[in-house]
Every structure is written in structure tokens, then in C-alpha cells.
Amino acid sequence: MSGLSLFEALEARRAAGSRPGRRDDGLRIALAIEGGGNRAAYSAGMALALDEAGLTDAFDDVYGTSGGALNAAWLLTGEAQRWMRSWAWPEVAAAGITNPRRVLRGGPLIDLGLLVHHVYESITPMDFEAILANPIGFHPMATDARTGEGTDLASYVTDRRSLQTALRASSCLPLLAGRPVRIGGRTYVDGGLSEGVPYRRALADGATHVLVLRTRRSDQYAEPPSRLERALLAPYFLRHGWKAGRAHVDRHKTYAADDLHLAESSAAPVATLVEVRPPLGSPDVGRLSSDLDSIANAIERGRVTMNAALGREESVGPDV
Image 1 (spheres, rainbow, N blue to C red):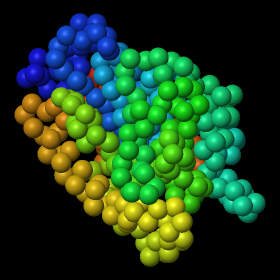
Image 2 (image 1 turned 90 degrees about the horizontal axis):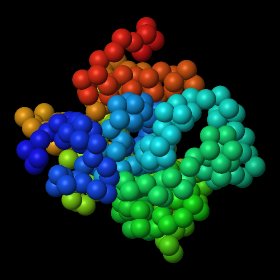
Image 3 (image 1 turned 45 degrees about the vertical axis):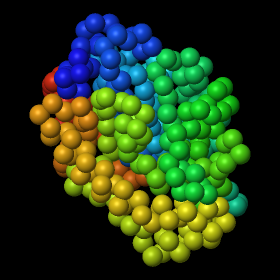
Image 4 (image 1 turned 90 degrees about the vertical axis):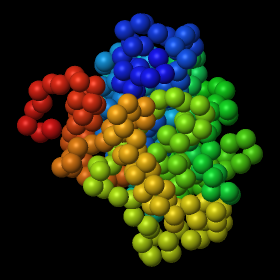
């Protein structure tokens, strides 16, 4: 089956009823999900479409960065169709994960502890045990605060608490989410500083095929931080890791290289590395957006876009 394209390989596994951990096709198929805060609503819709198409079990590993790691976790609970749309739910927004008033009290703008220990426990219960038991490998990506290097936290995820900690580490935006998250004697910040689109890690781990879910349109580019942003973050990185600060300054170069590589690979005659991006004209969704209608729309656009890539065309409403 080595000559199959990505989508042919996925369909062959689905048709054969292939199960993770019990393969005989000689392939290793990975899913890589880009981060981007609430912009990850687009990849949430894409992941939802994969699950609706019965393709989740066709993957051997799922890699995710920041919001992409959260979507990867939901996918591996087996309850994606129940909870993936919760990015846009008012009851989740009402929990106040992002709250400017908290800053006035000396707290973080983004409270990731509130997300994983309250929202994911009581409002939209995440089945952490199902993720741990899933034979599909879960790879949340973070950035080592001291070295600036991308790190796969999979080896640290051994129980419910360490899984929750890894989700916090992968999404820990410098300054906005407070201090770096400590795991295994080291500290970590948002994976987007080093590996915002974590497909290269999947390839390095031996993946033969990788599907990459993007949250930026092809006409959206990562830009270097502004002078003001660098000035505001300088004390944080001086205290917690200047090499992570260097990664933050240079991350737009990494994104540019990824954009070029993925575009070329996706256009290959027998594409084994394929990206799916929000279509041109899709609305911008900010990292910290609180516009629930826009977030819900992004989820649906992502779902429709993924279905189109799978050849599962459908009619859509006027708002999509």
C-alpha cells in the first residue's frame, strides 16, 4: 500500500475496518493540527468532519499544538461529535477562561487551569481516561522555555493529572497565560513558538502519510512581533528563558517555510503529506476572539472544507 496517496490510504483503512494498534498495511498515518487560540475553531470543524466520516481510527498518531492539542484530545475521547462545537458555546465563554479583569488582580489574562480543571471537568467533561487508553498516540507539542526547542510531551502523559498539565503547557501563551508550565523538571510555553504546525515531528517519528489541519488561510501569514509586543514580552523571556524569546521573534520564518513545504507537498501527483486550510474569504478569527457567532461559523466552515477534501460534498447555509 506504499504507493497510495493520503486520502486513498485513509479510505482503504476505513473500508477494511483497520484498527489502531492492529495494522498490517505497513503504513503509519498521522494527523497534525495547527494551533492558533480560538482560530482553532477551523481545525475543530475539520476534525469533526473526519470523525463523522468514520476516519478517526484510520490514524496511528495525532499531533497538536496549543488549540490544536485541545482538538486532538477531543478527537481521541471518542466524543468529538458531542463536544467539538463547544468552542462556541455560551456556557464555556461564561466560565471566563479569558478575563481582562483578572489581570487587574495580578492574575493571568488566560486561565488554563480554569479550562482543564473546571470547564473540562464540569461544563464539557473531557474523558481523559479514554484519551490515555486510546491506542492512537497523542502528542501535545510545547516549547521548552529554556532552550526554545519544540518538545513532544507524549512521554510525560501517564495519568489524568499529567495529561491536563500537558494540555496547559501546549497552550501557555507567554505572559498572557502566566508562568511557564512545569513538567518533568523543565518548564514549557505554547508550542506555537517552535512548532506551530507539528507535521515535521510526525515525519521525524516515521509517519509515511500526514494530514495537516491548518487554521490560517493561504493568504494569511505569520508576521514578526511588533516592537511593542517585543518590549512587553522582554521581561518575561529574560526571566523564564531568552531562547524561547528568540523562537517567538523568529516563528514567522518557521511558518513561512512550513507554508511553502506543505503547499508543494499537497500538490504532488500522489500526495502523502497534505494540508487542508480554511478557504479564501473565510472570516478572520482572532486568537482571543469572544465572538461566538464567528467561532461557530469557523467550526462549520472547517467541517464543510474537510468534507470537500474527502469528496463528501454537501449543501451549506448562507452564513458559511
